[in-house]
Structures are given as C-alpha cells and as structure tokens.
Length: 125
Image (cartoon, rainbow, N blue to C red; front, side):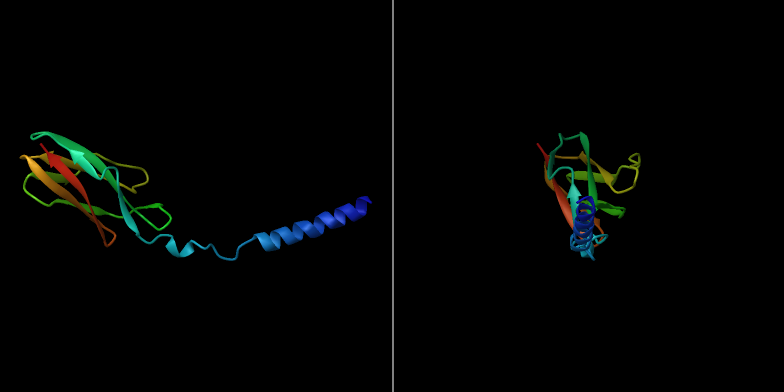
C-alpha cells in the first residue's frame, strides 16, 4: 500500500509540474517597453508666488517603473517648471518637477519621456 501511494503521488507530481508550468509568460511582450507616464497628481493648485512639486514615472505594460529620462515644460507663461535636481530616487525610475505660479490662471506641465507625452494641470487662483 505504501509503495502504491508513493507511485501515485509521483505520477501526480509529474503531471502537475508539466501541466502547471508555462513555456512563455503571456505578459512578456509588455515588459521593458514604455507604455504610459504615471503622475502623482493629475491637477495641482498653486497660489501666485507659491510653488509645489510632483513626481512622474514612465511605466511599461505591467506598470513596472522604467529608468527613462523625462523633460518638463510649461504650456503658458503663468507658471514656471523645472526638474528638481535634489530628488535622487534609488533606483532612478521617477523624476520630480518643481512648479511655481507666476500669475493667476491655469496652465499645464507637459511631461515627455520614452516617446510618450502627458500633462498635469496647474491652477493658480
């Protein structure tokens, strides 16, 4: 009986390992290729004369952050934007923008990286 049980368990284990294992990951084609820019906020409010920061990352199809350089620019003269050089994440898979409001109005911070483009709306009351 013990021998028969061992033999049955061995056959079951062999079937589980052969049937349960995948030859290729179904998400492998999404790995490592920039798919989207993810931002900390979609909209920020900044008082005139004030400033704020937000982070952004380029992610692949599985939402894994990638070490891709990004640039930040302002869509209008009502704001100024710059890359925050003091922000040093480890690993370097995100960047932080520093936004200052020059005058009242609304504008966008344009983010470009990995052949992708996104924006964050800035409202200055």
